[in-house]
Each structure stands twice: as C-alpha cells, then as structure tokens.
Length: 398
Image (cartoon, rainbow, N blue to C red):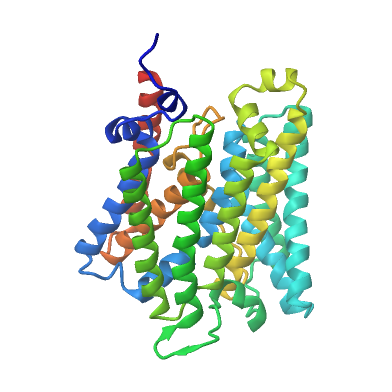
C-alpha cells in the first residue's frame, strides 16, 4: 500500500526553487524588467520613476502593448505580420482625412477606422489562410502597399491638428469625481481596487487548480508574488495619481490585456489557436477549422493596428507619412522577448506585455542618458537575440 495520502495526490506540493525552474522564462523576463528599471533609475539619477516620465512611458508605449496582444496570437498561430507599422500610418492618415478634412464625428470616424483595420487584416488573412501563401510574403507585400497608400493619401504632407475630442484617446486623463487636492481621486481609487481584484482572481484560480489536483505554486511564494505585484501597482498608481492621473490610453490598454488574457486562457477559440500553432495537422484532423482560425487572427491584428494608428496620430496631433515606421519590429521583438516561440504554439499575454515594457523602458532610459539612436538599435537587437537564444536553449535542454 502506498504511503502517499489522497490529499497529497490531489494537491501536489513543489518547492519554490522547483517551481521557479519550471517557469524560468516567465519569471526571468519579469526579473529582467525589474532589473532594467532599477538600473536606469539609478543611472539617470532618479528621473525614470518621476511621475511625468512614468506618464510619458505609458503614452509612448501603449500602442506597442496593444499591437503586441494581436501579434502574440499571430505568432502563436505560427505566422508573422510585418505590415502592422504601415497599417498604423495608413489608419492615422484615414482618421485625419475623416476628422480634419471631412469634419466627421470622432466616434463615427473611430468605428470606421477600426472597421478598415479589420478589412485590411481580413484581406491579408484570406491569402494566408485559404491560399497557403506564407504570411511573411503576404505581410511584407502589405507593408509596402500600405506605406505607399499612406504617402498617396497624404500627398506627402502632414494633416492636422485633430479635434480635441479625438485627441483624448491618447493624451486625455481620467476625470476626478472627488476633490483630493494634488492627488487625482479616480486614479487613486482604481489603483487601490486593481490589486485587490487581481489578488482575488489569483486566489480563486489557485483554489480551482487545487480542487482539480493540478500543480500550484508554494503558498509562501504565492503570497510573496502577489504582494510584490500589489506593491508595484500601488507605487506606480500613486506616482501617476500625483501628476495628472491615469491616462485614458492606459485604461484602454488594461481592459484589452484583461480581455485577451481571458480569451487565451479561458475560451475554446484561444485554446484552439494554441493547438493549431503547436501542431496544425493534428488540430485539423480533430475537426477544427484551422483556416478560419488563421483568418481571424489576422482580422484581429488589423483591428488592433487600426486602434494603434488612431492613438499614434492623436498623440502626434497630426497624420504624417512616416508614422508607424519600424513599429512592426518593436511589436514582434516584444512578443519574442516575452517568451513567444518562433515555431508557434507558445506564448502568454503577460509575457508580451512584459516584453513590450522591456523595450519601452530601454528606449526611454537610453534616451534620457543621451545614447544615440545607433546604439539604441544595437542594444535592442542584442536583447532580442539573447531572448530568442534563451528560448531555444531551454527547448533543447528540455
């Protein structure tokens, strides 16, 4: 008779060291982000964590995070999208024509821009999913086509400024409903509420996993991890609340992160995308329409690129022919740095977000210390190479 009790079989226990080794990529990237932030905080003489700089950091990188959510699904599905930067520029140009030249209502213009982004994604996804043309080729063509269309639509000139209401999506802040002096009350209350909700959801997920006999993190590690997350959110939220409050675009970004985390971890379509990226033939043989899944990932990517295009244009307060140039590289790099596998089937929303902020903090920190764009590009390239090497090394070691 086995000496192992039923309770032990139902609730597997692992040591903290074993658990961290099993989730090395996820926690390694988070530790790297913290280390990079601490390094630049010290090296810049405390400038990095100043409220005004933290606000700028959010405004400068929100669109990268938003596009990384869609790009992660594309990469997990086993594809790539090189056209997102050009779509950003093109949608920004369309938004300028609608709101500035045609005086269209900003809500209607925004909905139409999202629809156009979805149509662009559908046009590219159609050739990739149903005609089996490699995504690299289709989206490379799209990158050239929509960059050319942007130049054509704008006639090589900037169009602006945008109406004030349209700009609020990018440069606006949450309004205050209670006067708290220098602190912004709405932002502060949300800052307190968010970690409480996150802790409740983490506790509920842990209990659910235990009830199904799944492996869970050691309890002390669970408390430590969630305590650190809560402290970080409270600190960053307080700093932002002491300046202008939470930016509107940050709220949009957080809602999208929560939505896509739910879709990828709790829905059938999310699990099917991962299955398709892991083994498309087996997924197709199991009765899943893999062509439609691939098609939908590109439609989704187009919509998010359209949203990012409006955010970028609103932040610049004009549509420019060069808008979005090189964005596709930052977005793809954010996903790979965050743990997505180049072979598909692997990647997490939280990882993509962490990867995007690693890129953003490096950009911001290197700009503050005065590094030229040449050195910045070299550093980002080396970080991307190191992240992919780390992924391949761990895979081969396993």
